[in-house]
Image (cartoon, rainbow, N blue to C red; front, side, top):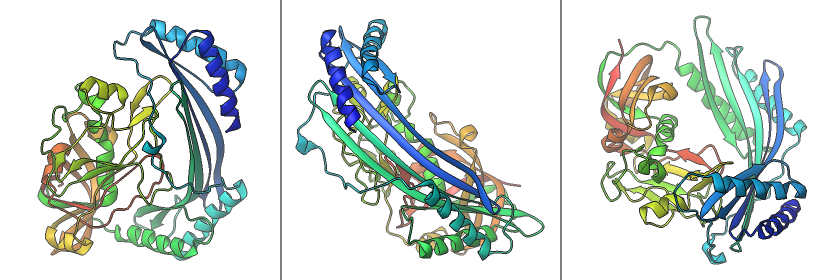
Length: 450
Protein backbone atom coordinates (compact mmCIF):
# COMPACT_ATOMS: atom_id res chain seq x y z
CA UNK A 1 0.00 0.00 0.00
CA UNK A 2 1.88 3.07 -1.28
CA UNK A 3 -0.55 5.36 0.52
CA UNK A 4 0.46 3.88 3.87
CA UNK A 5 4.11 4.78 3.24
CA UNK A 6 3.11 8.43 2.78
CA UNK A 7 0.94 8.38 5.89
CA UNK A 8 3.58 6.87 8.12
CA UNK A 9 6.07 9.56 7.13
CA UNK A 10 3.52 12.25 8.03
CA UNK A 11 2.86 10.47 11.35
CA UNK A 12 6.58 10.37 12.05
CA UNK A 13 7.00 14.08 11.33
CA UNK A 14 3.93 15.09 13.35
CA UNK A 15 4.94 12.92 16.32
CA UNK A 16 8.47 14.26 16.42
CA UNK A 17 7.20 17.85 16.15
CA UNK A 18 5.20 17.26 19.34
CA UNK A 19 8.16 15.65 21.09
CA UNK A 20 6.60 12.18 20.99
CA UNK A 21 9.37 9.62 20.67
CA UNK A 22 7.42 6.39 21.15
CA UNK A 23 4.52 5.76 18.82
CA UNK A 24 2.92 3.20 16.53
CA UNK A 25 0.73 3.22 13.43
CA UNK A 26 -1.46 0.22 12.61
CA UNK A 27 -3.54 -0.08 9.46
CA UNK A 28 -6.12 -2.71 8.55
CA UNK A 29 -8.19 -2.95 5.40
CA UNK A 30 -10.91 -5.49 4.72
CA UNK A 31 -12.62 -6.10 1.38
CA UNK A 32 -15.58 -8.40 0.94
CA UNK A 33 -18.05 -9.40 -1.72
CA UNK A 34 -20.94 -11.86 -1.56
CA UNK A 35 -24.14 -12.97 -3.27
CA UNK A 36 -27.06 -15.09 -2.05
CA UNK A 37 -29.86 -16.87 -3.87
CA UNK A 38 -33.53 -17.44 -3.13
CA UNK A 39 -35.64 -19.63 -5.38
CA UNK A 40 -34.35 -18.98 -8.90
CA UNK A 41 -32.65 -15.61 -8.53
CA UNK A 42 -30.00 -13.60 -6.71
CA UNK A 43 -31.73 -12.27 -3.60
CA UNK A 44 -28.88 -10.33 -2.03
CA UNK A 45 -25.57 -8.88 -3.10
CA UNK A 46 -23.03 -6.84 -1.18
CA UNK A 47 -19.58 -5.43 -1.78
CA UNK A 48 -17.56 -3.38 0.67
CA UNK A 49 -14.10 -2.02 1.34
CA UNK A 50 -13.18 -0.50 4.67
CA UNK A 51 -9.94 0.70 6.21
CA UNK A 52 -9.01 1.82 9.71
CA UNK A 53 -5.87 3.62 10.84
CA UNK A 54 -4.94 3.24 14.53
CA UNK A 55 -2.32 5.40 16.24
CA UNK A 56 -0.83 4.91 19.71
CA UNK A 57 1.74 7.02 21.49
CA UNK A 58 3.35 7.31 24.91
CA UNK A 59 3.18 10.69 26.64
CA UNK A 60 4.53 11.09 30.20
CA UNK A 61 4.43 7.34 30.73
CA UNK A 62 0.83 6.97 29.63
CA UNK A 63 -0.45 5.58 26.37
CA UNK A 64 -2.93 7.43 24.17
CA UNK A 65 -5.09 6.12 21.34
CA UNK A 66 -6.76 7.64 18.29
CA UNK A 67 -8.24 6.21 15.10
CA UNK A 68 -9.53 7.41 11.75
CA UNK A 69 -10.96 6.13 8.50
CA UNK A 70 -9.82 9.26 6.63
CA UNK A 71 -6.66 8.16 4.89
CA UNK A 72 -5.22 11.52 3.90
CA UNK A 73 -2.04 13.21 5.05
CA UNK A 74 -3.79 16.23 6.54
CA UNK A 75 -5.71 13.99 8.95
CA UNK A 76 -2.47 12.58 10.40
CA UNK A 77 -1.69 15.74 12.37
CA UNK A 78 -5.14 15.66 13.96
CA UNK A 79 -4.74 11.95 14.68
CA UNK A 80 -1.53 12.54 16.61
CA UNK A 81 -3.07 15.48 18.47
CA UNK A 82 -6.11 13.43 19.57
CA UNK A 83 -3.92 10.59 20.82
CA UNK A 84 -1.72 12.98 22.80
CA UNK A 85 -4.78 14.48 24.52
CA UNK A 86 -6.12 10.98 25.17
CA UNK A 87 -2.87 10.02 26.88
CA UNK A 88 -3.19 12.95 29.30
CA UNK A 89 -6.75 11.93 30.20
CA UNK A 90 -6.10 8.20 30.57
CA UNK A 91 -6.70 6.76 34.04
CA UNK A 92 -5.28 3.27 33.55
CA UNK A 93 -2.24 2.55 35.71
CA UNK A 94 -0.87 -0.27 33.55
CA UNK A 95 2.55 0.09 31.98
CA UNK A 96 2.57 1.78 28.57
CA UNK A 97 4.34 -0.45 26.05
CA UNK A 98 5.29 -0.01 22.40
CA UNK A 99 7.00 -3.16 21.13
CA UNK A 100 10.75 -2.74 20.94
CA UNK A 101 11.11 -4.80 17.81
CA UNK A 102 12.61 -8.15 16.88
CA UNK A 103 15.18 -9.40 14.40
CA UNK A 104 13.87 -10.19 10.91
CA UNK A 105 14.71 -13.87 11.50
CA UNK A 106 12.18 -13.99 14.35
CA UNK A 107 9.30 -13.63 11.91
CA UNK A 108 8.39 -16.88 10.22
CA UNK A 109 7.92 -16.70 6.47
CA UNK A 110 4.37 -17.48 5.41
CA UNK A 111 3.09 -18.57 1.98
CA UNK A 112 2.48 -15.54 -0.22
CA UNK A 113 -0.54 -16.86 -2.12
CA UNK A 114 -1.65 -14.63 -4.94
CA UNK A 115 -5.28 -13.68 -4.38
CA UNK A 116 -7.40 -11.40 -6.53
CA UNK A 117 -10.89 -10.41 -5.44
CA UNK A 118 -13.44 -11.90 -7.87
CA UNK A 119 -15.77 -9.66 -9.80
CA UNK A 120 -19.46 -9.28 -9.04
CA UNK A 121 -20.26 -11.32 -12.16
CA UNK A 122 -18.13 -14.24 -10.97
CA UNK A 123 -19.64 -14.17 -7.47
CA UNK A 124 -23.18 -14.19 -8.83
CA UNK A 125 -22.33 -16.97 -11.29
CA UNK A 126 -20.87 -19.14 -8.51
CA UNK A 127 -23.91 -18.58 -6.29
CA UNK A 128 -26.31 -19.55 -9.08
CA UNK A 129 -24.20 -22.59 -9.96
CA UNK A 130 -24.65 -23.85 -6.40
CA UNK A 131 -28.35 -23.05 -6.53
CA UNK A 132 -28.90 -24.90 -9.82
CA UNK A 133 -27.02 -27.92 -8.55
CA UNK A 134 -29.03 -28.06 -5.35
CA UNK A 135 -32.42 -27.77 -7.05
CA UNK A 136 -31.53 -30.35 -9.68
CA UNK A 137 -30.60 -32.93 -7.07
CA UNK A 138 -33.80 -33.30 -5.05
CA UNK A 139 -37.50 -32.81 -5.75
CA UNK A 140 -38.14 -32.10 -2.03
CA UNK A 141 -36.20 -28.81 -2.13
CA UNK A 142 -38.36 -26.11 -0.52
CA UNK A 143 -38.42 -22.36 -0.01
CA UNK A 144 -35.75 -21.39 2.46
CA UNK A 145 -33.06 -23.16 0.50
CA UNK A 146 -30.18 -20.73 0.07
CA UNK A 147 -26.87 -20.80 -1.71
CA UNK A 148 -24.18 -18.19 -1.77
CA UNK A 149 -20.68 -17.28 -2.87
CA UNK A 150 -18.31 -14.96 -1.05
CA UNK A 151 -14.76 -13.69 -0.99
CA UNK A 152 -12.70 -11.57 1.34
CA UNK A 153 -9.26 -10.03 1.50
CA UNK A 154 -7.40 -8.44 4.41
CA UNK A 155 -4.37 -6.17 4.46
CA UNK A 156 -2.46 -5.35 7.66
CA UNK A 157 0.43 -2.90 8.05
CA UNK A 158 2.26 -1.94 11.24
CA UNK A 159 4.94 0.71 11.73
CA UNK A 160 6.45 2.04 14.94
CA UNK A 161 9.16 4.34 16.27
CA UNK A 162 11.39 1.39 17.17
CA UNK A 163 12.02 0.55 13.53
CA UNK A 164 9.25 -1.99 13.03
CA UNK A 165 7.70 -2.01 9.55
CA UNK A 166 5.54 -5.08 8.86
CA UNK A 167 2.86 -6.01 6.36
CA UNK A 168 0.71 -8.92 5.22
CA UNK A 169 -2.04 -9.42 2.65
CA UNK A 170 -4.17 -12.54 2.26
CA UNK A 171 -7.61 -13.60 1.10
CA UNK A 172 -9.99 -16.49 0.58
CA UNK A 173 -13.20 -17.33 -1.22
CA UNK A 174 -15.88 -19.95 -0.97
CA UNK A 175 -19.46 -21.11 -1.34
CA UNK A 176 -22.12 -22.20 1.10
CA UNK A 177 -25.18 -24.34 0.51
CA UNK A 178 -28.19 -24.67 2.80
CA UNK A 179 -30.87 -27.13 1.80
CA UNK A 180 -34.42 -27.04 3.15
CA UNK A 181 -36.42 -30.19 2.39
CA UNK A 182 -40.20 -30.55 2.75
CA UNK A 183 -41.84 -34.00 2.76
CA UNK A 184 -45.34 -32.57 3.19
CA UNK A 185 -45.39 -33.10 6.95
CA UNK A 186 -42.23 -31.43 8.19
CA UNK A 187 -39.21 -29.50 6.99
CA UNK A 188 -35.58 -30.26 7.68
CA UNK A 189 -32.41 -28.42 6.76
CA UNK A 190 -28.68 -28.97 6.50
CA UNK A 191 -25.79 -26.75 5.42
CA UNK A 192 -22.07 -26.75 4.79
CA UNK A 193 -19.27 -24.75 3.17
CA UNK A 194 -16.62 -25.16 0.51
CA UNK A 195 -13.63 -22.83 0.73
CA UNK A 196 -10.99 -21.69 -1.74
CA UNK A 197 -12.44 -23.67 -4.61
CA UNK A 198 -13.77 -21.22 -7.20
CA UNK A 199 -13.60 -22.33 -10.81
CA UNK A 200 -12.94 -25.97 -11.54
CA UNK A 201 -14.73 -27.35 -8.47
CA UNK A 202 -17.77 -29.19 -9.86
CA UNK A 203 -16.71 -32.53 -8.37
CA UNK A 204 -16.30 -31.03 -4.90
CA UNK A 205 -19.65 -29.24 -5.16
CA UNK A 206 -21.38 -32.43 -6.28
CA UNK A 207 -19.98 -34.31 -3.29
CA UNK A 208 -20.85 -31.53 -0.87
CA UNK A 209 -24.40 -31.25 -2.20
CA UNK A 210 -24.94 -35.00 -1.86
CA UNK A 211 -23.69 -34.87 1.73
CA UNK A 212 -25.93 -31.93 2.62
CA UNK A 213 -29.05 -33.50 1.12
CA UNK A 214 -28.36 -36.84 2.79
CA UNK A 215 -27.93 -35.04 6.11
CA UNK A 216 -31.27 -33.25 5.74
CA UNK A 217 -33.11 -36.44 4.74
CA UNK A 218 -31.69 -38.28 7.75
CA UNK A 219 -33.42 -35.86 10.14
CA UNK A 220 -36.99 -36.64 9.08
CA UNK A 221 -39.11 -38.42 11.66
CA UNK A 222 -37.01 -37.39 14.65
CA UNK A 223 -38.28 -38.69 17.96
CA UNK A 224 -37.80 -37.75 21.59
CA UNK A 225 -35.22 -38.81 24.18
CA UNK A 226 -35.90 -39.95 27.73
CA UNK A 227 -34.20 -37.97 30.48
CA UNK A 228 -31.07 -39.65 31.76
CA UNK A 229 -27.33 -40.03 31.36
CA UNK A 230 -25.90 -41.02 28.01
CA UNK A 231 -22.61 -41.59 26.28
CA UNK A 232 -22.43 -38.54 24.02
CA UNK A 233 -20.45 -37.90 20.87
CA UNK A 234 -20.28 -34.23 19.92
CA UNK A 235 -19.73 -33.86 16.19
CA UNK A 236 -16.93 -31.55 15.06
CA UNK A 237 -19.25 -28.59 14.41
CA UNK A 238 -20.72 -28.72 17.91
CA UNK A 239 -17.36 -29.25 19.61
CA UNK A 240 -16.08 -26.25 17.68
CA UNK A 241 -19.06 -24.21 18.94
CA UNK A 242 -18.35 -25.26 22.53
CA UNK A 243 -14.66 -24.40 22.23
CA UNK A 244 -15.50 -21.04 20.63
CA UNK A 245 -17.95 -20.15 23.41
CA UNK A 246 -15.45 -20.75 26.20
CA UNK A 247 -12.36 -19.53 24.34
CA UNK A 248 -12.04 -16.33 26.49
CA UNK A 249 -11.15 -18.52 29.47
CA UNK A 250 -7.71 -19.01 27.90
CA UNK A 251 -6.98 -15.26 27.70
CA UNK A 252 -4.59 -14.07 30.39
CA UNK A 253 -6.26 -10.65 30.62
CA UNK A 254 -9.53 -12.35 31.61
CA UNK A 255 -7.77 -14.45 34.24
CA UNK A 256 -6.18 -11.29 35.65
CA UNK A 257 -9.64 -9.69 35.92
CA UNK A 258 -11.11 -12.73 37.66
CA UNK A 259 -13.15 -13.66 34.60
CA UNK A 260 -11.58 -17.07 34.01
CA UNK A 261 -11.46 -20.18 36.18
CA UNK A 262 -8.06 -20.97 34.62
CA UNK A 263 -6.39 -18.28 36.74
CA UNK A 264 -3.38 -19.80 38.50
CA UNK A 265 -3.82 -23.16 36.74
CA UNK A 266 -0.78 -23.10 34.41
CA UNK A 267 1.11 -26.34 34.97
CA UNK A 268 -1.96 -28.13 36.30
CA UNK A 269 -4.07 -30.83 34.66
CA UNK A 270 -7.27 -29.23 33.33
CA UNK A 271 -8.28 -31.84 30.73
CA UNK A 272 -8.08 -35.52 29.91
CA UNK A 273 -4.65 -36.70 28.78
CA UNK A 274 -5.99 -37.25 25.26
CA UNK A 275 -6.58 -33.49 24.91
CA UNK A 276 -4.01 -31.23 23.28
CA UNK A 277 -5.18 -27.77 22.21
CA UNK A 278 -2.95 -25.84 19.82
CA UNK A 279 -2.88 -22.23 18.68
CA UNK A 280 -1.10 -22.15 15.33
CA UNK A 281 -0.65 -18.99 13.19
CA UNK A 282 0.90 -21.22 10.51
CA UNK A 283 -1.68 -23.99 10.16
CA UNK A 284 -0.66 -25.51 6.85
CA UNK A 285 -4.15 -25.72 5.33
CA UNK A 286 -4.97 -22.10 6.12
CA UNK A 287 -4.19 -19.69 3.25
CA UNK A 288 -4.37 -16.76 5.68
CA UNK A 289 -1.33 -17.17 7.91
CA UNK A 290 0.18 -14.25 9.81
CA UNK A 291 3.72 -13.85 11.21
CA UNK A 292 3.06 -10.98 13.64
CA UNK A 293 0.37 -10.02 16.13
CA UNK A 294 -1.43 -6.73 16.72
CA UNK A 295 1.59 -5.26 18.51
CA UNK A 296 4.16 -6.43 15.98
CA UNK A 297 5.39 -9.34 18.12
CA UNK A 298 6.43 -12.46 16.13
CA UNK A 299 3.73 -15.11 16.29
CA UNK A 300 4.46 -18.74 17.07
CA UNK A 301 2.79 -22.12 17.23
CA UNK A 302 2.17 -23.25 20.78
CA UNK A 303 0.30 -25.94 22.69
CA UNK A 304 -2.01 -24.15 25.12
CA UNK A 305 -3.04 -27.51 26.59
CA UNK A 306 -0.74 -30.49 26.13
CA UNK A 307 -1.82 -34.00 27.11
CA UNK A 308 -4.33 -32.44 29.50
CA UNK A 309 -1.91 -29.99 31.15
CA UNK A 310 -2.42 -26.23 30.80
CA UNK A 311 0.93 -25.07 29.42
CA UNK A 312 0.18 -21.36 29.00
CA UNK A 313 -2.50 -18.74 28.85
CA UNK A 314 -2.57 -16.41 25.84
CA UNK A 315 -0.83 -13.07 26.30
CA UNK A 316 -0.29 -9.67 24.76
CA UNK A 317 2.54 -7.41 25.96
CA UNK A 318 0.51 -5.76 28.73
CA UNK A 319 -0.97 -8.94 30.21
CA UNK A 320 2.44 -10.63 29.97
CA UNK A 321 4.10 -7.74 31.83
CA UNK A 322 1.55 -8.08 34.64
CA UNK A 323 2.34 -11.78 35.08
CA UNK A 324 6.07 -11.36 34.59
CA UNK A 325 6.21 -13.68 31.56
CA UNK A 326 6.90 -13.33 27.85
CA UNK A 327 4.03 -12.53 25.53
CA UNK A 328 2.75 -15.42 23.45
CA UNK A 329 2.22 -13.07 20.49
CA UNK A 330 -1.58 -13.08 20.70
CA UNK A 331 -2.37 -9.36 20.74
CA UNK A 332 -5.49 -8.18 18.91
CA UNK A 333 -6.31 -4.64 17.83
CA UNK A 334 -9.34 -2.42 18.10
CA UNK A 335 -9.82 1.32 17.78
CA UNK A 336 -9.43 1.91 21.52
CA UNK A 337 -7.38 -0.90 23.00
CA UNK A 338 -5.13 -3.94 22.73
CA UNK A 339 -6.86 -7.25 23.40
CA UNK A 340 -6.19 -10.95 22.93
CA UNK A 341 -6.89 -13.20 19.96
CA UNK A 342 -6.20 -16.66 18.56
CA UNK A 343 -5.11 -17.83 15.11
CA UNK A 344 -5.88 -21.43 14.13
CA UNK A 345 -7.03 -22.69 17.51
CA UNK A 346 -7.98 -26.37 17.63
CA UNK A 347 -8.23 -29.60 19.55
CA UNK A 348 -5.76 -32.00 17.99
CA UNK A 349 -7.21 -35.14 16.37
CA UNK A 350 -6.85 -38.49 18.08
CA UNK A 351 -6.08 -41.96 16.76
CA UNK A 352 -9.55 -43.51 16.40
CA UNK A 353 -11.43 -43.65 13.13
CA UNK A 354 -14.96 -42.32 13.20
CA UNK A 355 -16.34 -45.87 13.13
CA UNK A 356 -14.09 -46.87 16.03
CA UNK A 357 -15.25 -43.85 18.03
CA UNK A 358 -18.88 -44.93 17.62
CA UNK A 359 -18.01 -48.51 18.55
CA UNK A 360 -16.37 -47.20 21.71
CA UNK A 361 -19.53 -45.22 22.55
CA UNK A 362 -21.65 -48.34 22.19
CA UNK A 363 -25.02 -46.80 22.93
CA UNK A 364 -25.78 -43.13 23.43
CA UNK A 365 -26.47 -39.93 21.48
CA UNK A 366 -24.63 -38.30 18.59
CA UNK A 367 -25.19 -34.54 18.90
CA UNK A 368 -25.16 -32.76 15.53
CA UNK A 369 -27.08 -29.57 16.41
CA UNK A 370 -26.86 -27.17 19.36
CA UNK A 371 -28.49 -23.76 19.50
CA UNK A 372 -28.68 -20.90 21.97
CA UNK A 373 -25.14 -20.63 23.30
CA UNK A 374 -25.64 -16.88 23.72
CA UNK A 375 -28.32 -17.55 26.35
CA UNK A 376 -27.51 -21.04 27.58
CA UNK A 377 -23.80 -20.77 28.39
CA UNK A 378 -21.80 -18.84 31.00
CA UNK A 379 -18.32 -18.15 29.63
CA UNK A 380 -16.95 -17.48 33.13
CA UNK A 381 -18.24 -20.45 35.12
CA UNK A 382 -18.20 -22.82 32.14
CA UNK A 383 -21.78 -23.97 32.75
CA UNK A 384 -24.00 -24.66 29.75
CA UNK A 385 -27.48 -25.99 29.08
CA UNK A 386 -28.23 -26.11 25.36
CA UNK A 387 -31.17 -27.30 23.26
CA UNK A 388 -29.87 -30.00 20.93
CA UNK A 389 -30.69 -32.54 18.25
CA UNK A 390 -28.92 -35.48 16.68
CA UNK A 391 -29.13 -39.25 16.41
CA UNK A 392 -29.23 -42.20 18.74
CA UNK A 393 -26.14 -44.39 18.84
CA UNK A 394 -27.19 -48.03 18.85
CA UNK A 395 -24.63 -50.82 19.13
CA UNK A 396 -21.89 -48.55 17.84
CA UNK A 397 -23.85 -47.29 14.83
CA UNK A 398 -25.84 -44.16 14.02
CA UNK A 399 -29.50 -44.84 14.69
CA UNK A 400 -32.77 -42.91 14.61
CA UNK A 401 -32.88 -39.10 14.61
CA UNK A 402 -33.87 -37.34 17.84
CA UNK A 403 -34.65 -33.73 18.68
CA UNK A 404 -35.74 -31.25 21.34
CA UNK A 405 -33.53 -32.44 24.17
CA UNK A 406 -31.19 -30.44 26.36
CA UNK A 407 -27.57 -31.30 27.09
CA UNK A 408 -26.18 -29.78 30.26
CA UNK A 409 -22.70 -29.71 31.71
CA UNK A 410 -19.64 -27.63 32.44
CA UNK A 411 -16.91 -26.87 29.92
CA UNK A 412 -14.04 -27.33 32.36
CA UNK A 413 -15.48 -30.64 33.59
CA UNK A 414 -16.18 -31.73 30.01
CA UNK A 415 -12.51 -31.30 29.08
CA UNK A 416 -11.63 -33.81 31.80
CA UNK A 417 -14.43 -36.20 30.85
CA UNK A 418 -13.52 -36.68 27.17
CA UNK A 419 -12.32 -40.25 26.73
CA UNK A 420 -11.73 -40.48 22.98
CA UNK A 421 -11.26 -38.30 19.89
CA UNK A 422 -11.54 -39.24 16.23
CA UNK A 423 -8.68 -38.74 13.79
CA UNK A 424 -10.23 -36.10 11.52
CA UNK A 425 -9.78 -32.35 12.01
CA UNK A 426 -11.80 -30.17 9.64
CA UNK A 427 -10.97 -26.46 9.64
CA UNK A 428 -13.53 -25.10 7.20
CA UNK A 429 -13.31 -21.37 7.86
CA UNK A 430 -9.92 -20.07 6.73
CA UNK A 431 -9.01 -16.64 8.00
CA UNK A 432 -6.57 -14.94 10.36
CA UNK A 433 -8.75 -16.53 13.06
CA UNK A 434 -10.34 -19.98 12.85
CA UNK A 435 -11.37 -22.59 15.43
CA UNK A 436 -11.76 -26.32 14.98
CA UNK A 437 -12.19 -29.68 16.68
CA UNK A 438 -12.71 -33.36 15.80
CA UNK A 439 -15.64 -35.47 17.03
CA UNK A 440 -15.23 -36.26 20.75
CA UNK A 441 -16.73 -38.85 23.11
CA UNK A 442 -17.96 -37.87 26.58
CA UNK A 443 -19.51 -40.65 28.72
CA UNK A 444 -22.43 -40.24 31.12
CA UNK A 445 -23.59 -36.74 30.21
CA UNK A 446 -26.87 -35.42 31.56
CA UNK A 447 -29.64 -35.22 28.94
CA UNK A 448 -33.04 -33.69 29.68
CA UNK A 449 -35.72 -35.09 27.38
CA UNK A 450 -39.27 -36.23 27.99
